[in-house]
Length: 96
Image 1: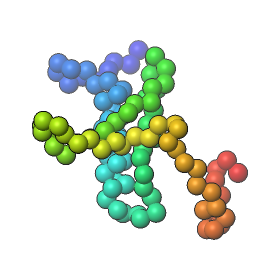
Image 2 (image 1 turned 135 degrees about the vertical axis):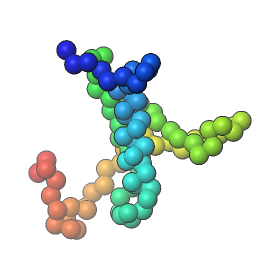
Image 3 (image 1 turned 180 degrees about the vertical axis):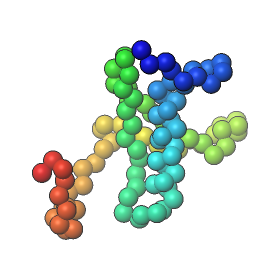
Image 4 (image 1 turned 30 degrees about the vertical axis):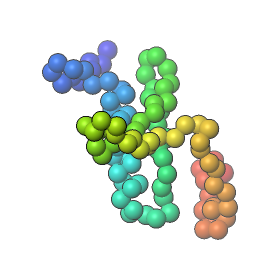
């Protein structure tokens, strides 16, 4: 059995790692490094209890009485398929 890494006294849970990774990916997307890449992040946590699709948001002022939250993750029904890109740039997906 693999022992979970802990920060005394709180254990790190898969959801915590998902939040950290989503924050890192979101900051890369928002940095504007590539203007053709953007949008919300798809995130799934797979553990002994199954698959969870967490809803992750952030606020630049969480200590305010009514903070404004920016949603980072996309739900399945919010995903949009982009077509025509592969033909335009002569690229192929791994599925093809």
